[in-house]
Length: 485
Image 1 (cartoon, rainbow, N blue to C red):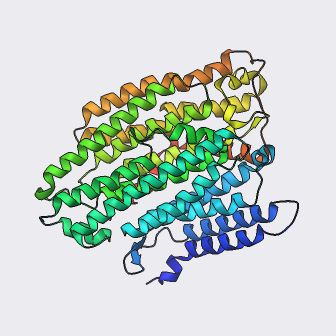
Image 2: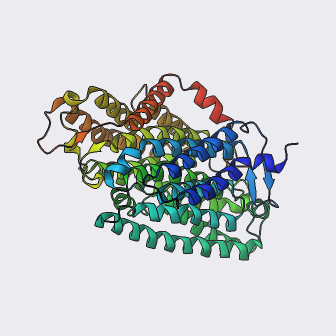
C-alpha cells in the first residue's frame, strides 16, 4: 500500500515551493526572475509528481477530512500546467503593464494550492479554509493594477461580495452541523440515508452552501460581480480565475450537491426543490449570458458573459446526473474543454500593445487578418470552439452535456440551451468578421506576440482542434474519473 506521504507529495512540493518563492522574492535584485524561476520549477515538480500518481486508488488522509484520488491528482496536474502557461505567457504582459513584481508569483502559487485543496476536501470546515486560501490571493491579484481605478474597484467589490458569501457558507455549515452533528461529507451522506426530524434545518443549510458556490461559479442571478472583476483584473489573472478558480469551484459544487442521498424516498421532495433551483439558475445563466454578450464591445466583459453562459451549460450537466450517483462525465469533459480554449484566448489577449487591457475593445481586432494571419487563425479557432462549432472541442463538450440532460428528462432546458447557443454564436462570429472582412480602425491596438504567449496560444489551439477531431482519448480518460465517491 502506498504511504500517505507519497500520495501527498505533490502538495508537499507545492507548499515547499511557495515558501521558497516567498523567500526568493525578498532578494534585492533588479530582476524578478528568481521568483519567477522558483514558481515555474515548483509547478513543474508538482506536475511531474501528479502525473506519476494518476493511477493511485482513492484514499482518505488526516482522519477522513481530505481525500486523495485520481481526480485530485489530475486536477492539481491541470492547475500546475495552467500556472506554468500563464507565468511564462504573461511575462511580457507584466513588464508592459509595470506589474512584474515578485509578489505575483507566490500569490499565484497560493491560489493554486487553495484551489487544489478545495477539490480534496471531504469536510465542510476544510472546504471553507481552502475556499479562503484560494479567494484571498484572487482578491489581491484582481487589484494588482494598483494605479487603475477599475482594477481597484473590481478588487474591493470582489472582496466584499466574497466575504459576504463566505458568511453564507458558514451559516449553511452551522445549520448542517446542527442537524447531523458532523461536518464530514461522508458522515453527512450516511446520515442522509435514513429519515430524520431535522431534515428542514439540514435542507436550509444545504441550500445556503449551494448558493455560496453558485456565487463562486457566477451562476445567474449571482453573476453580477464577474464582468467588473474580469475587466479590472490583469489579463493573466483573469485567465487564472476563468480556469483554475472556476474548475475548483465547480468540482466542489458537484460534490456538495451529492452529499444527500437523493435515491432515498425521504428526500424526494427536497430533491425536487434542488432540481428546481439548479434548473432555474441554469436557465437564467444561459439567457443572461447569451443575451448580454451580443451587446458587449469590451473583450473582457464579453468573455465574462461568455463564462456565465458556459456556467449554464455546466449546470445542465449537473442536472443530467443528479441523484444517479454515477460518474459525472459531461461535467468533467466540459470543464477540461472550457479550460483549454479559455487559456488560449487569454494568452492572445495578453498580446495587446500598447493599450491597457481594460480598454481592449472589439474594434481592436478589425483588420487583423491583414496584419497577422496567424493570430487571426488562432482567435478564430477559439471563437469557433466557444460557439460549439463542429471539429472543435467546444462542440463535443456541448454534445455530452445535451445528451446527459436529455437522458434525464431535461429536454425543455436543452431546447433553451440550443436556442441560446444560436444567439451567442452571433457574438462569437462578430469578432471573426471584424478580423477578416474589415480594414483596421485607426485607433485599433497593435497585437505584438511574445514568444511564450504565442507558444501557449498555439498549443491551446492545437489541443482544441485535435480533441475536436479525435475526442476519444479525452473521453475515455475522463470517463474513468468520478467526481463523487
